[in-house]
Length: 244
Image (cartoon, rainbow, N blue to C red; front, side, top):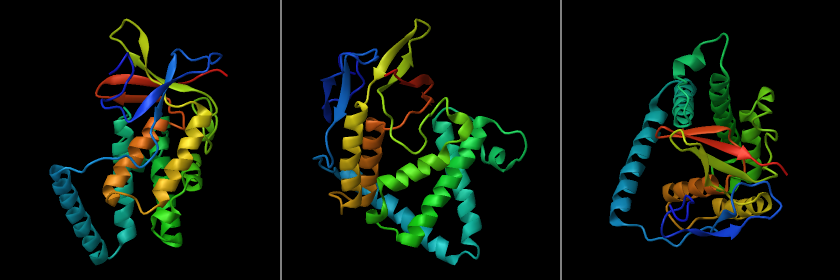
């Protein structure tokens, strides 16, 4: 943390003054550097990467030997949706997603997550599983599939970039809340996403799995979308959209 703002040292970006007329409870927003970063891969990371690639190779071999890969893929998709939703503080399980009836909003979103993942897989299988076929248009399409009509209060623009400032608020043990992080303002975030797409579609500077981590970090830092709630290690955060 630096000057009350959530960053690491050395900082892969900089803080800039927020617009004076913005309804933002902070004076600065964080601007991440363009991609790619200039990093040195350690021997330890190289060993971890090698083990991960070995595991992916084993999975690919398993995939070619099973009789009904689509059925198995469906289970993987639901498990991924379960783990993703639990990272965000919900307790949705695979059983919840298979169980039909009166579903909670969390269960419906987890199912939508699984459906969006299937949609992405189908499109990339059809168009070719290459970096060139990953795009902002695909991300927006998947986000639109993820969100539901009855969630418009949480996310008024499914499939579109945000148009205002957002910020993360953090609980302070009963004292109140404080601003934890402010990503780039909307027009800067859109510009950063163009750089994100360019690097995503390029050959990349680092091994693919490392590039996946870099792109994930950049997307989380830019935060072009509004997410209503997140719990990380027991700390509740709110992503709040400001009033223009």
